[in-house]
Amino acid sequence: MITPIELFAQQAVNGLSLGAMYALLALGFTLVYGILELINFAHFNVFMIGSFVGLIVLQALGIAGQSVVLHGAPLIFALLLALIVTMLVCGILGVLIERFTLRPMRGVRGPMAMITTIGVSYILYNVVLLATNAQALNFPDPLATQDFDIHHVVIRAKQILIWIISLILMVGLDQFVRRSRLGKAMRATAQDAEAARMMGVDVDRVVSTAFFAGSALAGAAGLIFGLYYNFTQYSIGYSAGLRAFTAAVLGGIGNVPGAMLGGILIGLIETMSSQYIATKWADVIIFSILILVLVFKPAGLLGALAPNRS
Amino acid sequence: MSDIPLLQFMAVNTYYGDLHVLKDVDYTINKGEIVVLLGGNASGKSTTMKTIMGVVQPRSGRVLFEGTRIDQSATAARVKRGIMPVLEARRLFPRMSVFENLEMGAYTRRSKAEFAADLELVYALFPRVKERRGQLAGTLSGGEQQMVAIGRALMGRPKLICMDEPSMGLSPLFVEQVFATIQDINRQGISIFMVEQNAAMALSIAHRGYVLQTGRVVLSGSAADLAANPAIQDAYLGEMVVD
Ligand SMILES: Nc1ncnc2c1ncn2[C@@H]1O[C@H](COP(=O)(O)OP(=O)(O)O)[C@@H](O)[C@H]1O
Ligand SMILES: [Mg+2]
Image 1 (cartoon, each protein chain N blue to C red):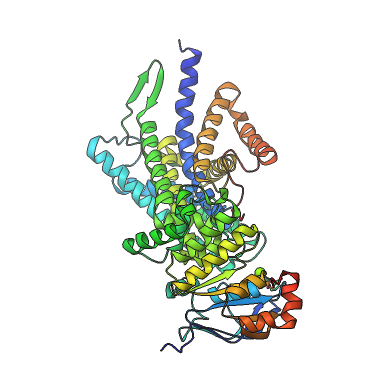
Image 2: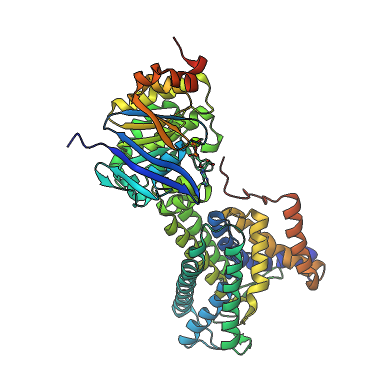
């Protein structure tokens, strides 16, 4: 028999895995919002594209379907290659989206830029819908189905992999934003773009960097989605994207540690409410939380709501 | 060589959309000078500073720095040439540490050795800034923030510092300190172009001045002449004139 504590621990393990994926995705919303005060809806489907890029790379390596299982160095090589290619392709896609659809209307007031991101998102969605005939595709599962069973709490190898990838990427981003010259320019631009410019910061370059980093992380999240659920399709961007967006708002949009915290919390809330209430209620609960946060703590758990100009 | 002005405005016209702010404006700032820009509210003083920094571009006219046209250059290029701002209301990066704010001042300067030397100079000028270096800039008092703002400008090793109302919102004690510091900095060879509401004090440390009225230069001359000018006394000095 599984005890209630073991059941809870199992859901915590699952929630942390989902949460890590949401956190990676939430970071992209937060990086861009922090600098441009723009909610980038194209981000949803950059994530979706990421899962397809990961799929293509793994298939190109001969890893197709769920029967090819790798170990050791070939496994690490395949996953690392898929991760790097996916992040690069998505990062470049994000930069191109900003450069060609958003930069021309920088400085235009009102919701135009946001509406443009919805348009771009819809284009990506439809391109993949048509290219795949709206089919769900099998995603390879090259990780040995080796599970660790600790007191009835099953930790799957791919969950450990997800934690490792997410931790490395989040620590990497945090250090980049904290310590690197460009990272400091990003923070300065988020806090006061005009003042940053007058220190000699090239704001266009900072914006490109934010789109690259955020979109590359969305790509990593897309790969993780495929590995976790063993499928992908054109429509995966919406539910994951909306949850990640909720995570960014929950943590405090514009705030990097906030996005990480928010992502983990949303992942835990999702699995816990599926376990203890009902799966079909998970979305109701998650989006009720979004509304409650917006009403009672609009700055989020850790956040400054907008670049503050005090 | 030395008679080339450091900064020159030649018939500059700056607009925000349809709003014509600077109208055929001429300024000359020579090397080593402190020049003060006086003028009522909305007369275009801050716009002058923004035009120098390249945050707004003039629609016509020229801006020259050391004889080279800069009015079409990017802001970063002007910073690299040696122009740094001390912005209206200080505008530090509030959620970055004092040290990081100073680093941002040196953003276009890559030499680590020069950075270390400049940092020592700033810390020597403002021991208080050194004490607060790890603190978030947004948590400092107004006077301390102004020291950081001036320190941040110095970290760019500027030839010219453009200051927009450096005494605004400071207690009288800090105001005196800020003006003393500006003189100190100027004695090290850095030229200052300064917008000030506190006309009496500004004229007392400046070499020359300009008076802007609804976007036109209506008066200019030596600081002493301006301070003695009855029109200036009525408009800007009032009872603030100290004997
Ligand atoms: N970014 C802007 N957009 C539109 N109008 C502006 C902007 N900045 C300033 N102005 C207008 O330009 C005029 C001059 O402003 P400013 O140079 O800030 O005056 P001052 O610093 O002398 O008080 C004012 O009428 C002001 O409203
Ligand atoms: Mg002003």
